Image (cartoon, rainbow over all chains, first blue to last red; front, side, top):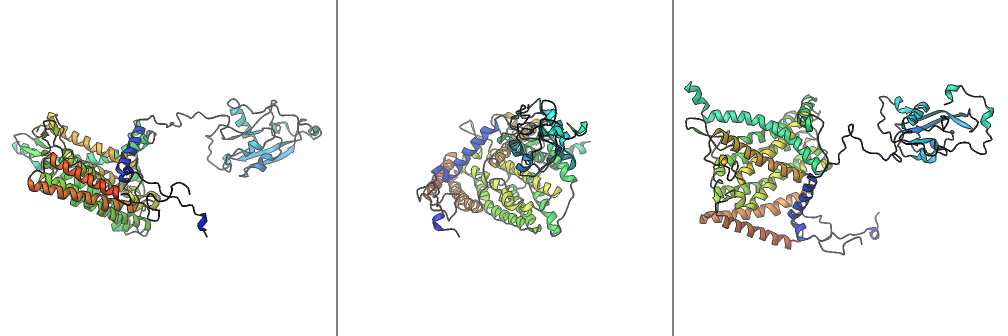
Amino acid sequence: MIRDEDIIRIAAPRLTAAERLYLPQVLDGMKTTLTHLFRRPVTVKYPEEKRALRVDNHRGLHRLNRDEQGRVACVACFMCSTACPAHCIHIVAGDAPWPDREKYPVQFDIDELRCIYCGMCEEACPVDAIELTPEYDFVGTTREQMVLDKEELLAVYDRTCGLKPRKNPRITGYPGTGHRGQSVPRPPADEAT
Amino acid sequence: MPVVAAIFQTQLFVSVALAVVALALILGATAYCIYFERKVAAWIQDRMGPSRVGPWGLFQPIADGLKFVWKEDSFPAHVDKLLFVLAPTISFVVPLVLFAAIPWGGQLDVGGGNLVEVQVANPDIGLLYILGVAALSVYGVVLGGWASRNKYSFFGGMRACAQMLSYEIPLGLCILVVVLTMGTLRLEQITAAQTGYWLGFIPQWNVFLHPLAFVLLFICMLAECNRAPFDLPEAEQELVGGFHTEYGALKFGMFFLGEYAHMITSGALISVLFLGGWHLPWLAWTQPDAVSWGAALCKIVVLCAKVCFFIFVMMWIRWTLPRFRFDQLLRVAWQGLIPITLALVAWTTGLLYFGVQRSPLWTLWGNVLILAAALAWVARARTPVTGRQDNLPPVGAGTGGAG
């Protein structure tokens, strides 16, 4: 039920003689469109030309950053998958084989079809390990192809780190963890990327 | 061989040849109108338009046409099949038939001093023929809406019916002004009568006699072609696709081509009636006494250029103006166009009685008077010509702005 006092009544603006006649207004509009007729088109012919992206904040494909020793920078804290509104990040954590952190991602999958590219994961990450890249032309022929695993996400980093360097590569070695990672058995070397 | 030569020199041969050539050319021109429309739309919106198929996208219409042809020619289960096929056919054929009476290139000397008209047919009732056949084109739209058995299509057909019937009246009255001035219904005579000069330099085109009728006729033609801002029968935002919602493939293509063919015909008709048809002042080859092949070709080019101009203006208007509301549409016709055109006809009839209907002084006076009267009426009217919703406060009431 709409109460009468909630209704805002707006008087129609008084039309000038030209507006009432309509035709002068038509000519005015046609003048506007005529000037546009001779303007340079703003079209970018896509595959041949590409727009200059704002590399720093374009939200495209994800990547998993490497630290300076080439290892995955992620510490498997699940902050990104918790922040993700589309629930597209799946992490399986394991004990880190390296002395400087507690955990590392054994598995790290992002479903790029579910992702809404909001950048919340990037905001949430405490070690700046997950970032969105300027890469936007990522395609696949199956749904499975569009789910990127850890290796593929690291490959994205390798492709794009020249264009967009890692934001804060220095954050390593966390106080208070006691370097507990040292005491667990190392996983096979090929997994410890 | 003289028999064969004689055949080539008859009006019949020229007519048949012209019909064949014109039909082919106009079908091509119609397809390229669609390309041009897309280009104009793009330019007005600071885009580039079709550019992928061929150089500058020039083969786009061919690709579109092939797509229409190769798509499945499907029939929805609930349609009336006969009418469903008939509707696009009518829409497509009617504008093509209209080309027959357009005088494309004046007279032509085909050899041996035989003068023939570069025109498929020049009946005594040329203009009546055009009006009569053009009125049939509404059947295409109405039947399309009716046969589809779809409420949106039906609304589209219904709107088309009301719109075309309303705009047929001022259209006919504007043409009547020309007929009263010229005293003939034959289009080639109307053209030939416009080839003189006033004061030695102003061409005697009807647009200088009756500028008001020219503008109003152009507006009516926009409505007759279902062009924006009068494209209510296919108002996408309200009626899905309007009368052609249920149509696909070649049948939709025929509706589409029919619309553009109608634009070409309308442009040709208004050029002949008001802009002197193939006549261009000071160009010797476009005078009525030039009867060589080159002159005929030159005249055809001149008329086509005028048609192109009108087509461009129609597109320009389409990409400038938003659509009328339906009550506004009918209000413009019945309260705006019809009284003004009736006054014009009355004035011209009076001039005809005194025999001064070809004098620009008198006709222009009439135009000015009628325009002034219309302006005075509009200035005093409670609502603007385009109308506004009745439930809004009256014009000028209240303080304005958010209350």
